[in-house]
Amino acid sequence: MSTQETPPEVAMRLHDPRVIDRAGRLLQLQGIDENELGQIVRVMDAMFRWREAEQRVSAASRRYMRLGDNDMKALRFAIVMSDKNEHVTARDIARHLNISSASTTKLLDRLEAGGHIRRTPHPTDRRALAVVVDPETRAAAEATVGREHARRFRVAAALAPEEREIVIRFLDQLSITTEGEWSDAPFAHADGPDAIEVADAAPESRTTPRAPPPASIWACHRNGAAACRRGPRVSTTIRPRTRHARAGERIL
Image (tube, rainbow, N blue to C red; front, side, top):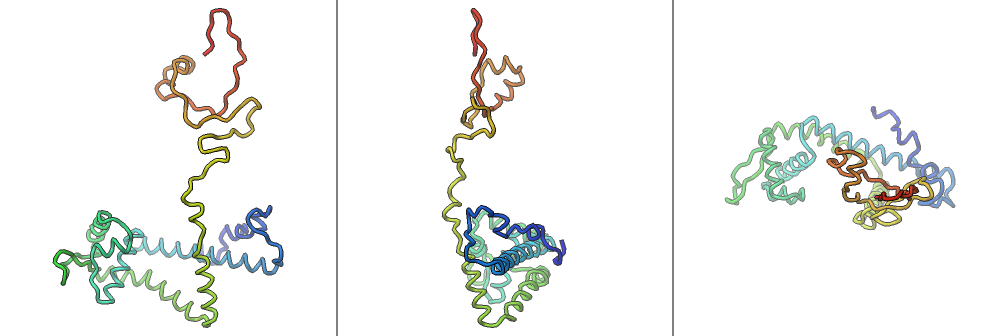
């Protein structure tokens, strides 16, 4: 998709509460006139376009350098620290990426095998190795991620000081999320985590446990040997039997 095309999500007005929250379950729009509401939606649309552009540039830079996300972050960290005349170790990278030492070793092995870094003796710590970024990799990183960062800096620099303060306050407020209130709890059905309700079921149906019933001789007899091998089929609806037993017959 070119940068000039309108993203489908914007074209479908999926950021407009008048479309996605018509019943007003999440937002109350009283007191906001149509012009203000339209402008707010334009802000939401602009945020979406920014996220799309960020993801697109990030993916393009990874494809260009044939590296993963953590690989790129490690290289950028090493480049920045090198510019500060500081030596980077595996422990520094593990701390920066918040990954284990084993994962860091694999990451550095991968980067070294690709010719992106070298591990050399640390000048002051004999127990550690310093991570040095290859000059060609550094040039490629500057041509992709570095160039985009510089362009964004120029956009921010073009704002007036009071405009930058508004942007800072706005982005800081967006960074405060409520995920702690819902992300740690698993999604549960209204009737409890161990039950599901069958939609449009017959009146005699009832809620049944998710766990399949144990295999039985009756299931094998009714469905054949293949059913015994693959286990019983789970049914969420149980209907009462209407057939009556004849003399000497058991109903299972």
